[in-house]
Image 1: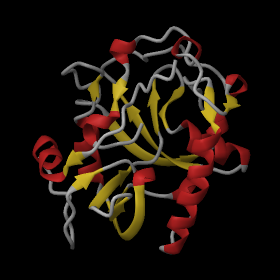
Image 2 (image 1 turned 135 degrees about the vertical axis):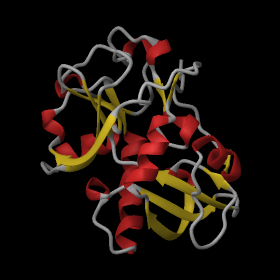
Image 3 (image 1 turned 180 degrees about the horizontal axis):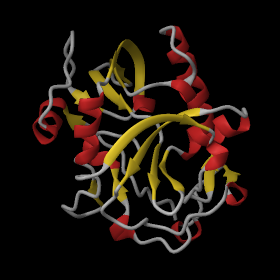
Image 4 (image 1 turned 180 degrees about the vertical axis):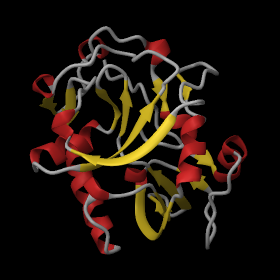
Length: 220
């Protein structure tokens, strides 16, 4: 059963701006916020300020809920080794790994380092249908509970770990919700061609505690 916990999204820009109470538009216009991997062309890249990043993250909700687990959290952007963190998801998809390699080539075309060192970005271009669109790129997200635990970005972390280098992470402290799964070590992460059944993806998954990043335009 192929279930997507974080569904694909296509959010009108004005709707997301109203929800986040920020303006995303810089120079040039665009109509929709879509996942970064759905951008067929990237024409412009802008840095997302710390203030805007915090406003975006504070609006993250728990799945099918109005609870904001990061509403009163503290945030930091740090470069650390993926080997030092725990994970929740037990697999990585081969197709996503290939997509990330293509995305890294996009980044280098703008004189940026590969995705492991990218800061928060607003990337503007066109979707696969030729419509003007943009994507909010946020580095992988880690929550600090008893240990550093990865919430989003296992594919990027997996590739970075394989390259034995460090990565930019958003670290969230003082989270107002327990983890939605039992943390595990990297030894449990298997590379697969298809998503396993949802019961095999996590240990002790609690869907009502899952962070729904798609509601703020982040591709979880």
